[in-house]
Image 1: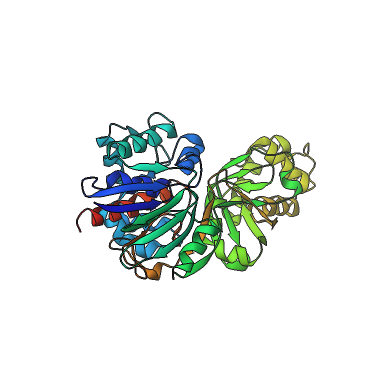
Image 2 (image 1 turned 45 degrees about the horizontal axis):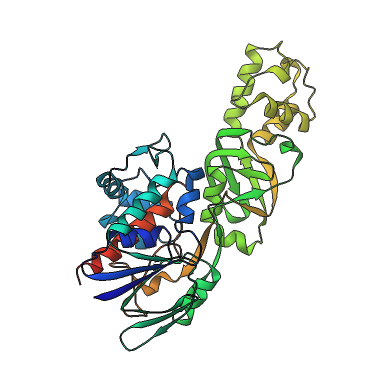
Length: 400
């Protein structure tokens, strides 16, 4: 039988192995770490954000800063609804949460890991852990894979290594072009008196812009010990990953904490002032933010918390609203978002045939997962790309 070697025991590698026809192939997974499926384990805080409830491929690709054009045809063949059906057929119940992220009913990533391990066991897939690939050599009609555990011969290689520098260098040595990887999905490091001792304060909907890049995003926002996080920050970090790397992660952002236009906020303030003139400004609930944050806004605006709202001058009101709706903050660095490290960059997409994820450079060589220059915002989208790409490879190899 023909030998398939899958290099990389992560999401894409295991999904591909789970869908291959074991009657046609001998299948081996090589994983350099002692455990397989490590990113699956930590995803979604250990619950595994399997995919996202977005079932129209044209809408789905909008969540991918890189790879959106190429993935349209891939998602037309296998999309989140197909992922849900695949797990359902294997008696894994999935649930759609309010924000459309999809998790196993068990709330445990181990459910997903066990499903994959059961599938590959049924197919007699050999898994070799602590097996580090040193070199891949193209022979006449096969590949010789030199590893820390000896040599392997492959008729077909499925390359699902993730985006480690070593794996990118190895595929570059085989002739592929690499788009230099940079971090995506990261939080912003900010030191500012506005946020001192307010870690954990969240905003249901905020707007963030990076004026120098003429870009903006909106969504939930969170103050952390290091600065700002939450979907609004993560989205803008993903879409501007390459530009922010060029800026060495030093830039200025403008934040609208209440996602309300300045003039509209002014009208809301004036109305409140007319209706409750005797209230003290410190105890006034004018906007949908926490009392602690409101009082901090007043402190940095140098407003006496005990001042009656009727006595707030037009100039003072402007200052409060500037800090609430147009607050400029200096970003000086980034932090990884939890353990879910994602990169922009990888194998150049022009060198991939997206009908079956085969290399245009190397015969009988298939590439999927984060090693490609494809990445998405947070919410299960990166996994969905892995499932869809891997499924295409398996379908192709099952029919040739």
